[in-house]
Every structure is written in structure tokens, then in C-alpha cells.
Image (cartoon, rainbow, N blue to C red; front, side, top):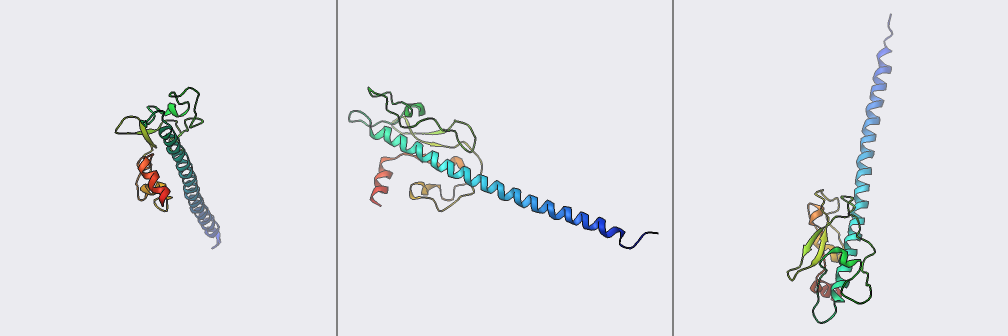
Amino acid sequence: MRSKSAGFTYMALLFAIAVMGVALAATGIFWHQASQREKEQELLFIGNQFRQAIGFYYERSPGGVKRYPQRLEDLLADPRGIGAQRYLRKIYRDPMTKEAKWGTVQSPEGGIMGVYSLSQETPVKTGNFRLIDSAFEGKGKYEEWRFIYSPIAVAVEKTS
């Protein structure tokens, strides 16, 4: 003879497992977003390091004609001077793709005036950027975050 409460323990166990599954799924989503935000902060830092290095290379061009670097490696050791001038310590890896490969923005005069991630992922951060990164507002992919050095934009930012 079976008691009336024999199925209750089984149902309570199934309910507990379902609640634990939902809690673990929510934790996984939260962890993924926290990890993504951390990678975004790293991408913003590294991208701005590239922008700054390209700016130094451009502004410190010998002679009267300013030039952008032809390769990212030129930022590691400027080949134009007598002594070795370093604008970056290394070619950083892209935190989104985990590779040291970047897309480059070509200057109309020739050379590299900016870099961007090759990631097709959708950013978590879509607003509230610093002024220098304000062009990233509302962009749908990381590859649309272009870290470009423009002497005109820098002059405008300094007056603001």
C-alpha cells in the first residue's frame, strides 16, 4: 500500500532542481556580461593607447611634412629618426578576438591613422562614452569602434 505523500518528495526534488537550474543560468548570464564589460574597458584602453601612439608618431614627424605610420610595427621603433623612438611597448592583442591582429584605418595621404577590433560581436556598452570616444555611441559591433587619430579632433577636444 502506497502512502499519499510518496509522490510529494519526488515533485519537491524536481522543483528544487528546476530552481537551481534557473539560478545557475542567471549566474552564467551575469558572469558573461561582467566579463564582456571588462573586455570592453580593456578594448577602450588599448584602442586609446594606439590612438595616442599614432598621434605622437604623426606630431613628431621630422621635417615640415607630418606623416602617419605605414605599419603598426613602426610605433614600436620609429624608423625615421637617428635614435630609436618608441611610441608603444608592444602590439597589444585585441581583447575581443584574443589576437594581435587589428583592422587599420588608412589615411587619405597614406599610412595608418587608426585601428579597430575585427570582432563582429555586439557591445554591451552603447552610450556614456568619454568625449574622445563619443563616436562609438549606438554602434552595433565592436568593429565599428574606430580609434582614429585626427589632428583636427584633438585640437577641438583641447579647446573644450
